[in-house]
Image (cartoon, rainbow, N blue to C red; front, top):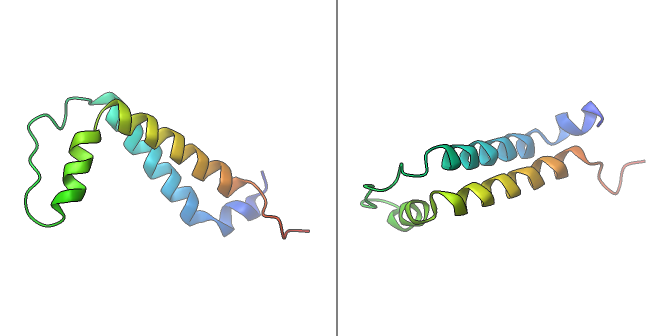
Length: 80
């Protein structure tokens, strides 16, 4: 891993870390969304998060976050 790739792709690194954190939180607190309600603005997004909380969001967050981190650390095709 070269630090140049980390500095060029810092947005992907932060997004990957955020997804991994969300996945870990979903595994640690699987019952956090039992009594939650999706009302108000952006209700569909809230409803999807409420329904997917637990194992599905945990696995998806860890996998997709890991792929984002792996892609941000690997060199691009046009590097010499």
